[in-house]
Image (cartoon, rainbow, N blue to C red; front, top):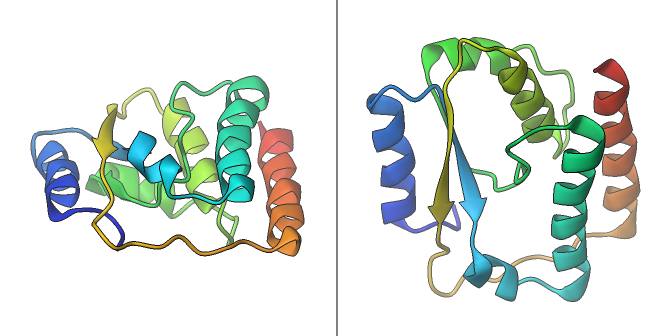
Length: 136
């Protein structure tokens, strides 16, 4: 897990306080450690989420989420089996007006090096993105 213990504890604390979905939002220090290609993909993902999915919480790919039992049931309805299962989950959760969703700004642990991502992964995930958008 690339996040600090404090970031993970904040997510857990919010769930125990009654939030159904807690979404880790990546801060500037996170983005400063990304390659130019990964940075472009991250910002592009947020833009696509805003434009095509019309969701309020656009940083869906942070990788850290906290879920209540009610939100877990929504997560189990996702169909995407690759990276964008997070995005599909956030879309489904945003549609469920009973769920309370919050964001938590997170920080990376020292010494974390972000991996490169192949163009094939980008193509595959764009295809998954449009599968999510079409299901709306």
